[in-house]
Image (tube, rainbow, N blue to C red; front, side, top):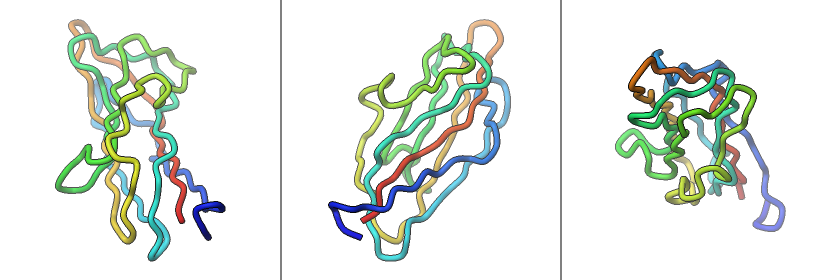
Length: 131
């Protein structure tokens, strides 16, 4: 494996995360031993339209001590069911694309706040190239 031929891997929660009025679950991943990574994409495959007009829901990628060390994807109010919301929609979401070797990466879906009733469910994911 080299910079010119990285191993791409997609990490996802495995379950729909209720980022509206639920209790989303933090999930984590580790890369192959000794390999560094580069975040290629972060997103949420939306299954319920987001209602979060007071505080946007978000999906953070980081560590146990810094939840958004690598990424904070802010999901906008009205993002519709069936959409994929990713770094094309929040272009400054990636804070640091470089993932260190042999480190556990924490993925934290964060509930949004709406002036009415919060809503928003989806499948968060992270796409990483390991080298």
